[in-house]
Amino acid sequence: MKTKYSFRTPFTKPFLSLATSCLYAFSVSVAANSEISSAKATIPAFTANYSVLHKSDPIGTAVRSLSYLADGTINYHYKTEVEWLIFSQKRTETSIISVENNRVIPQFYSYKREGTGKDKYYKWQFNAQENTAQDLGRKRKVTPLDFSNNLQDKLSYHLQHRLNLIADATKKQYTYPVVSTSGSVKDYTYQYDDEEELMLPFGLVKTVRFKREVKEKKRVTYAWFAPELNYLLVKLYQTKKGTEQFEAQLSSLTIDK
Image (cartoon, rainbow, N blue to C red; front, side, top):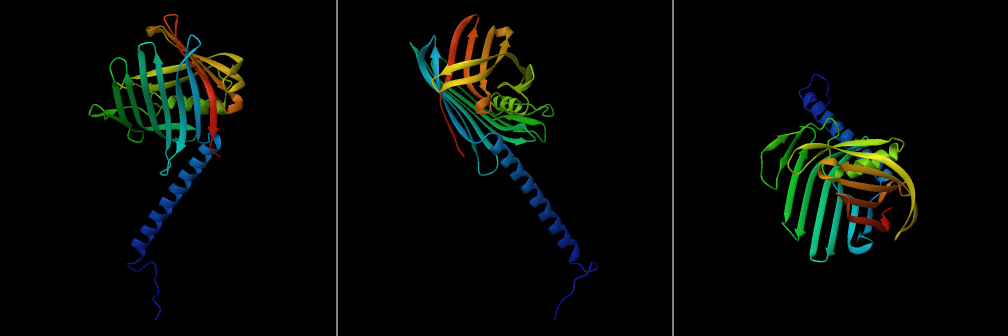
């Protein structure tokens, strides 16, 4: 005997509720996969290696990498190892992020520095939907933060800048609100400086140069991005109080396809 179900049977409501939930979950999954596919098409997973110099002398190495995780998030990582005279330092930064409509959304940030001087370690967790953040490293309470203006952590803004250049590299200025390791928010501004062809360990590349100045610290950073490499950072040069601090030049690049 076959059982017929109508909209009057008690089975209908829970069935429709379950079906609606499944449909919603499927829609969210499709949207998430679409965002991941779009991000991979724009910036495939990569590993970029850099030579770190001081007054043209090699003093260390740096690695910048991006990988796509199984849960749909992105691991953006930066590591430097430097030795110069009596100074030595190892530094790692990691941002776990997602990308929606070309906007980088930070979820987790960690920073670790070891070597000459005081060691430092920071760990932050972000919730853009609830506009909150928490300093996990120092076990502090949840802090309210406004993510509506595309708030970034101290590493993720680099990726947001690259995405913005890919989308539109004609602007003379790009500004990013960045949350510091203390929880305060400050605007980081890249100003267009010039175009330049560089001979690097990687080879000859055409670049667009940007400048970021921190007046209170008398620090100026120049960053070169290569349009032919999808605006990858290929050179970094920083001075403080007019004295060169370091320079990083791209030496090799691996792109996962």
